[in-house]
Image 1 (cartoon, rainbow, N blue to C red):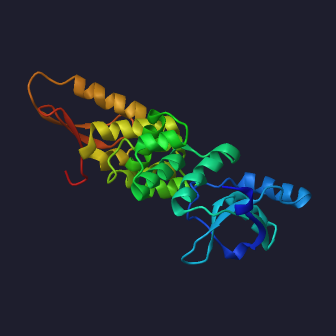
Image 2 (cartoon, rainbow, N blue to C red):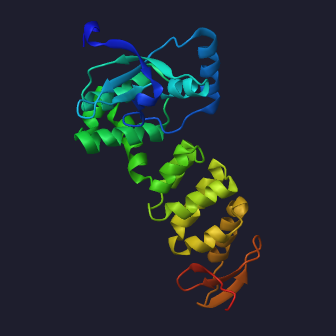
Image 3 (cartoon, rainbow, N blue to C red):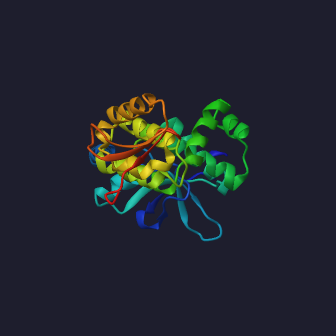
Length: 269
């Protein structure tokens, strides 16, 4: 693309169509404040990058949403922009490429979701994606796997900044249909990455007891899980069905020594 093909102009902020190509889902409020302070002091030094959709005539943002948010925070109405003649395919690819080279770093899930779009919408193979972004195929596969296994609830909480990428890496080990309840509990209890890992591991071992596990005081999950493992390891010689009380959470449980399973004890039992 020659320099003559790039149109430098001022665009009204309200005319920009956001979210079509940007791989970014999580926006840093502190970074936006810093950008706003810088723009107020020195002006907008770096233009945003847009394309015009030939069918709708709309100007679609490709790179620079942090700057757009900073300008809106300052009460500005115009943004300095470069209008480039990108096709849809080029815009989708460069949205992440430009960000990689000049922008605030994306997290693993954001990268994975964007590369999954390249695969699903454009039919790009992981090999082609890796070559385009000058990355190893393992790097691409790892991030695409996280994105592919993430439920809508997980993605939404992540986009709102309630779930970190570190938490997401643990949570995607669970089936998509299991994730929503677990994600909500992680957010509600503000669990650490380690506590999230312990919760995920407990549910993976006893998926049929997910609801019971989620009813436990998860902050002490490590101790509870170890105690349950100890109980099962000390099975009596003859098979029995026994009722016990968890020493950490105080809840009643049934221990089936035949199947080596632990079940929640209902109040009516």
